[in-house]
Amino acid sequence: MRVYLAKELLEANQNNAGENRSLLRASGVLMVNLIGSPGSGKTALLEHTLKKLSGYRTAVIEGDLYTDEDARRLSSWCNQIVQINTEGSCHLEAGYIGHLLAQENLLSAELLFIENIGNLVCPAEFDLGEDIRVVLLSVTEGNDKPRKYPLAFKVADAAVVTKTDLLPYCDFNLNQLNEDLRKINENLALFTVSTKTGEGLGDWCKWLEKLLQRKRSA
Amino acid sequence: MRVYLAKELLEANQNNAGENRSLLRASGVLMVNLIGSPGSGKTALLEHTLKKLSGYRTAVIEGDLYTDEDARRLSSWCNQIVQINTEGSCHLEAGYIGHLLAQENLLSAELLFIENIGNLVCPAEFDLGEDIRVVLLSVTEGNDKPRKYPLAFKVADAAVVTKTDLLPYCDFNLNQLNEDLRKINENLALFTVSTKTGEGLGDWCKWLEKLLQRKRSA
Image 1 (cartoon, rainbow over the protein chains, first blue to last red):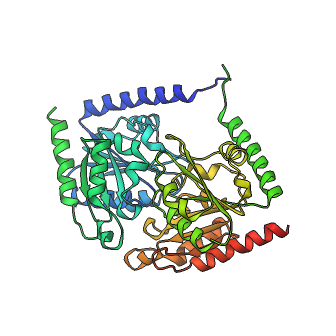
Image 2: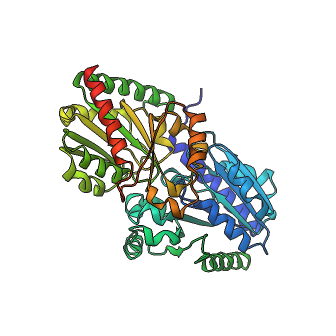
Image 3: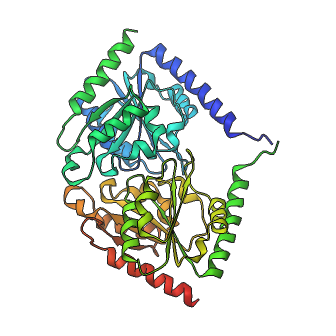
């Protein structure tokens, strides 16, 4: 019997992530990994992002413990979608993504989004080989979350504060959030959006487009 | 070098949980394990519960990855509080709790609350030896969460729907939630609360008091 150590598995994940990154570089696909708590608004952000970026070839890898509800919800808005059900496991790993990149012809997309499992802790530890990691935080979760779950924000390229339409009803201090985020990750891009009112979606999508242009011209 | 298998560790956890349960039975302490996503309102619910139940001897074991912010927030409202910082680990285990029960004189409490790490996935797998497991779900997370994270709801004794003051601003279908919960766990007690308006806190606290009386007379 082969006994696997957690450390070995994390190393294996890192190797797989490197392979994914090489494949994406060769194909010019921009891969974006979205992480955040259950109910932080990942699927809603994706839905509205896909609508706004409908001029591009888009694909989604949808991660859930069970069900394909989110994949069905998004399927009208992208060129291709693949569901991963982890059946209880709390995060996605680079090996799963590599398997799908090889099998599912996802490399014909220009923009490939991954919606990770709803969890602000474990997915932060697993590099999937993405170009861009984005962490979502809804205003109803409270502005203290980066202090309490720092890794997710430390390893991200952007933070998207969601559900800003609910700001009037929540004790959410955006200035304090900004200050805390600067201490954890001074290079983090910060967006504030509401998929209900559309606020902030334009800036967020422009940022993605700029990254895609930069990747293609690299 | 000793290599531990995940299965062995889960078995060890179950043994530790059994020992905790025996200790609690002998002492007549009611131990309540609160689980829920980051920002689901665990600390706020605890704060208001402790205030309402101030006639009892209460203690709290506060779980966080880092920081003792929540413990400081709650310390005025209970007789004793202990902070566990997991430094990145995504759940509490029965062994940690057993250690604290032995070291920290927590068994002199009547009601002992555990605030687990903010995570709707991993803590569901670890029995801590509690009498009562309670899962929180804020209305802003959406009513689809039991379908997508069923284990947390299957192994709970009660679900507390929090932040009901935000119901007018969210697409949250309480009837659908109720229907989904019945399929997953027909014995689940269901509470709806708002710590802002106080709605539902009385029923929730009465339920806890009834369980405490039942435990003492057992």
